[in-house]
Length: 123
Image (cartoon, rainbow, N blue to C red; front, top):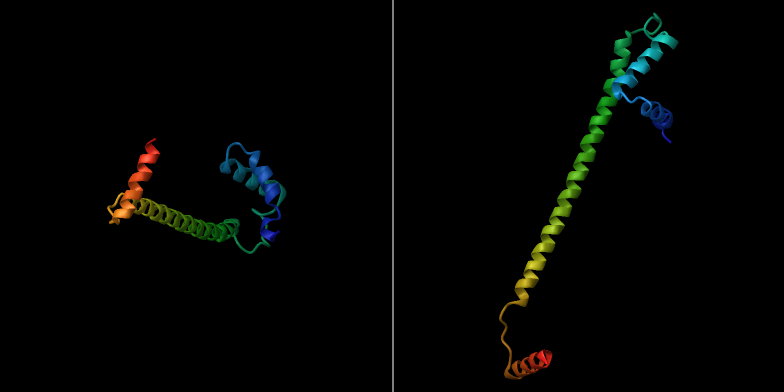
């Protein structure tokens, strides 16, 4: 399990308890920071809390957008391949249908054999 995923189960459990969605989850998270950490007041952090939060936000936003684009491109390519296979299959079926209804030249013996087979099939 990657380091970035090691808290996923815990965070998913917490998130699922927030019926108000992401807004409620973020409110809980920032409330926790206010009550249990010195994020908002520590002079030792070296940068404003907003800058810390935005840096982390932009890092993960970039990763999420890139993943979304990659996943969409893969889905689009798979869909294109599926449509192409379907198109080819339809063309092959149409060609087979056209082949079976075309006129072909046969010898007199072959014609007699076909006539006998058709007569027997009707009986």
